[in-house]
Image (cartoon, rainbow, N blue to C red; front, side):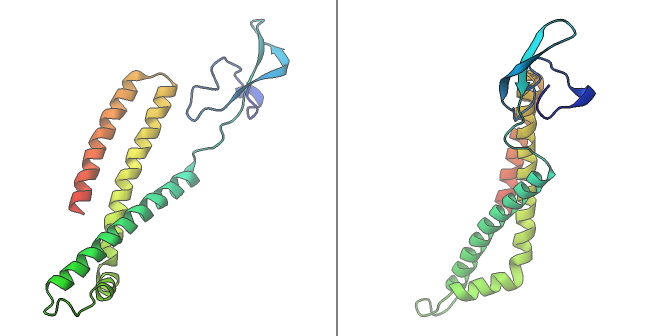
Length: 166
């Protein structure tokens, strides 16, 4: 049994600690228990240092969205400043960055947020597939690992196409 397993669902099976990713540690207990088959069970599992639950997923998605939003905002501000400079009649005397920022924040911020949301969603799906791949590797399921790698490649190509269009 592991530290965090209690009651009837305690399996005390060798390798039960390392069949999922992220894996916890394994340690030898001073109080060994004899199993039903007469074999002493001295090894215990400790929980992993971090847990992947819905809070981690939400925080990670917000991180991806912020990252995509900041990149897109920088790109659109540069594009707006260049277009204002290019189409102005006095090219040397006009300051174009501040009016470009004002135009972006007034008229185009929703477009930037929506486009970055789509990119973050595709990236999140790709990272979820990577997590499933790690789980399959821990359980030594090679067919699922290859299938998930192919799926990740397709999602990566789709993400690159969306970034190009965005």
